[in-house]
Image 1: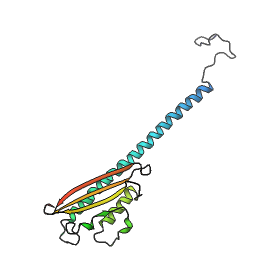
Image 2 (image 1 turned 90 degrees about the vertical axis):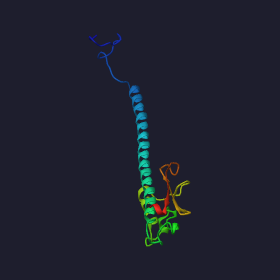
Image 3 (image 1 turned 30 degrees about the horizontal axis):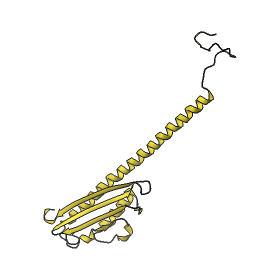
Image 4 (image 1 turned 180 degrees about the horizontal axis):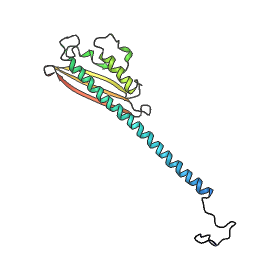
Length: 173
């Protein structure tokens, strides 16, 4: 017997042999495969979360832009496009861009709709999904509510939401 090797006092051809058996190699490959599949699943979830975070950030910025545009137009002396005079020009759904002509004055809804379509995808019509601007006149105040709910993956089962409301006072713009 050679010094330093423990062969359990069993005679073997060629002396003692060390290494992995076929079963040990298969078990280690299965363990590696299961752990790799788990990591792959976590990577997919992290990637979808990142995409939805970007969508949420864009929706918040878009909702703020819509409200700021309406507030800015509230200072316009042209009463034909001033939201305090004609709130219906800014009120409505921004889901279908084809219903708005590029020649409409003002054509903000057309631009808002196209920006949403380019950044978060077209309106898919899933239950709960909406892209809506509500402009309501109450007394001398204008209430602007923006509701943007878009698909965040999983075919309408995961919606990304952004709500924005603001009260505009004509004399304080």
